[in-house]
Length: 203
Image 1 (spheres, rainbow, N blue to C red):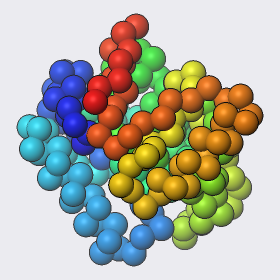
Image 2: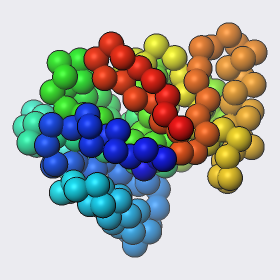
Image 3: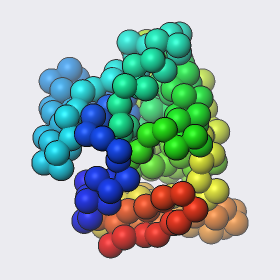
């Protein structure tokens, strides 16, 4: 939730949160359910009432998904494999829904790791951290490199942190530097907070 989770509370107009956990669809059923419950508990500690919206239930049903997400005040996207998450967003049409909701300031968005990477322009360099060829059942094999483009830069989460992926993130940062890709590196606990035209990094 970051070192200052109250920032998410300030952005939200209400207390209903949708959890998108499809970045963990490679896990077995029990581990995935535990991951979702952790998010529910963390959001509950901030006063949110949370439900998972499993994008797999809406593959090819974009209209129904749009109706469902319109009922929430916050969309919280947890980490995992960003390439799986990107596939889920495209197949369900959630990528277009999120762009519309956020551009029109209809919802607050929060998340971490894959949940923030999905907002950047593309995923080039992230394959050094996440396996783009990890394909859960029911998913298409095509690797999707473009992202939502809601941030004008890429993000390197878990940078210089006590996280199993931190050493791979160093390689990703080197790739972005070598290829002149604008990026922001975040240590665990840090967060990017955007409110209208105001943007800051909180520690």
